[in-house]
Image 1 (spheres, rainbow, N blue to C red):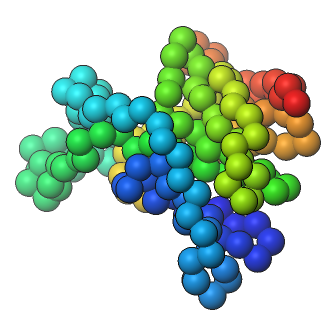
Image 2 (cartoon, helix red, strand yellow):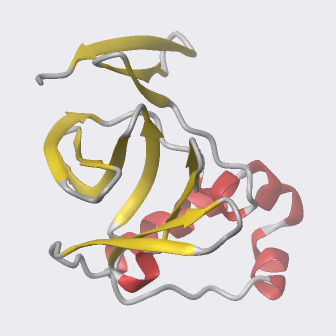
Length: 169
């Protein structure tokens, strides 16, 4: 969900690539839709998600077997088309599920839903999967004044580095 001005933008990717645009009273004003390739949620995705969960400190404290007793694991057939979305100065920045060679694809729309451009940019640190599951996700990137700011983790130094890339107009 993102709010700018008098509009609320809601990721409705369970329906495919779809963003609902609402007024401040919750009335649907428009739907922004785009045909994008669907990526199947594979066994590889499931195994990766389970490994991240198993290594989550909250799950470790509870114990994996106890955790499995209280949580039902379900997933859709396809990965969500929209991974994240932000709005800044009349532009909707949508992180897609297209990732390759350390880069992630962002589609940029105006507030009427017209695609303006797309960028393949360095993938930022992702919120811990456990944080997403338990409702505490974070965003480690920002589009601001023609730049893409993002954090990169230096595991050896146990620190984060702030990086900046100029966006081609």
